Length: 69
Image 1 (cartoon, rainbow, N blue to C red):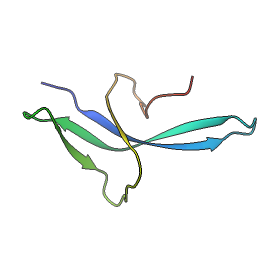
Image 2 (cartoon, rainbow, N blue to C red):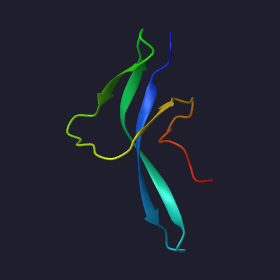
Image 3 (cartoon, rainbow, N blue to C red):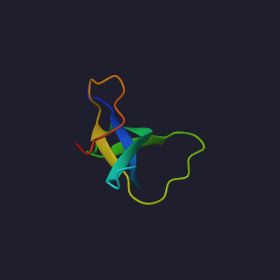
C-alpha cells in the first residue's frame, strides 16, 4: 500500500534578525491513485490560492513540511 502525501502551503516571512524564512502549513492529504495521479482532500473551511506542494509523509511525529535549514 502506498503511503499518503501531505499537501503543504508555503508562506514567507521575515524574522526578527531580518532573515526571510518559509513557514509550511499542512492543509490536506493526497492519496496516490491507480492512474498515476492523486486524490486530494483539503481540510474543511480552507480557501486555497497560489502555489502548494505535495510531498511524501515522513515518520516524524510533527511533520509540517520542509525547513529552510
